Image (cartoon, rainbow, N blue to C red; front, side, top):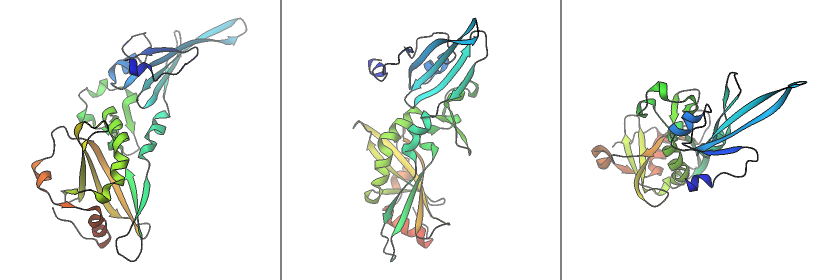
Length: 256
C-alpha cells in the first residue's frame, strides 16, 4: 500500500482514500473489487442554488493503474450520475498503430503497418471468474466491435513489453501457430522485471488492399501463458518475419 499511496499528488480539498476503506460512496464496490484500483478521490462542496439556499454536491473519482477510471457525482437524496473518464484512452495510446520499412528484395521498400487489438489489454467475459452481473460497467471495454473486460495484468505486461517485442520481430524466431488462418506467435521468456514467465504475442499478416507495397501486421492478442506452450506449438515450424511478409506479398501459405 505504501507504493500505491506514493502515486497520489496533493489534491487540495480532495480526500484521498486507499482501496479497501469503505466510505459509503457509490464507487466503493469498484475500489475493492478491481485489483489495480489504488483508491479514490472524494470531496463534498457546497454551491449556491438560489439566494438563501445552497446544495451539497459530492464527487468520487476512482483511481486505477489505467489512470482515473470513473467519476460519480450526486447530491444528498438525489440520483447519481457517473461517467467513464477519458484518461483510459490516453493510457491506451501505447497501442496506437505504427509503421516500419522492410526490404523484401522486391525492387521497392515495403511498409509494414502494425495494428493492435484490444485483446492486448482486455480478457473475454468467459475468462472472468465473476458472474456477468457482478462485473462493474466501468470495467467493460467496448471498441464498437466487441465488448470485453479490462484486464490489469494484460495491460501492465503489454505496456512494458509489447512494443519492443514487435520492433524486434525481424530478429526473432516465430512459431506458425495455425497455418489455416494463418496466424503466428512469438514468446518472451522473461517479464519486464526479469522474472521467468511466458508472454506470447499472436499476430497475422496480409496485404493492404487499399495501398500498394503496404502490409498489415495485426496483433491479435498478447498475454501470459499460464500453462506454457502446447505440444503442437513446441513442435511447429519456426520461421523469420521476412519469410512471413514475403509469403503474404506473393499469396503463399507457410505450412507448419
